Image (cartoon, rainbow, N blue to C red; front, side):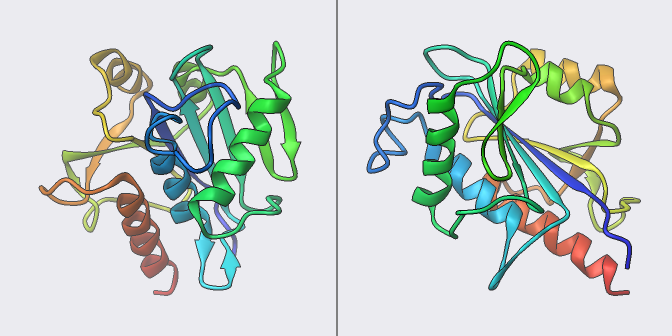
Length: 199
C-alpha cells in the first residue's frame, strides 16, 4: 500500500509563543495549549503506534512574539507519549530552542520550529480542505488521503484567515452540523480516511 502524506493545520489563536509556561497550567497560562496538545495526539496516535504518514502544524498566534509554527512529523517524531503534557513539553522545548530567521529548525527528532505565519503555511500546501460545518459532507467528498486539513482551536478562523484559504482555493468539507472539539474533528477525519484505505 502506498502511504499518502496527510497534513493537519491547527490555528492556535491564544497559544503562547514563549517557553515560559507551566505544563501544569496548559489551559490558562499557556493560552489553551491543551487544545493544541490534544490535536497533535489525535492526529498522530494509533493504539500502540504512530501514524507515519501525517504532518501536523500548529500555528501559534499568542503573546509575546507571534507567529510561530511548530510542525510534528509522524515518521520521525520521538519522545512523544499520548498525553497532553508530553506534546506540550515538546512544544516547550521547541520554543526554548527558538525559531530561525528563515526556514525551520529541528528542536527534537521530528519536531520543527519556524516563524511561518498562517499565510506562509497555507501557501506551502496544496489540496487544502477547510473543515467547516457549512461544507460538503465528508462522506460524499472526493478525498484521496493526502489533503491538508485546516481547523481552528476554540475560536473560529478570522475573516482574514478565511480569505487566505479562499485565495488558495481551499474547499469546505463538513463533519456535520454540530460543532465538535478540534481534536475530535481530527479523529473523525482520520477515521473516515482509514475506512477508505481498507476498501
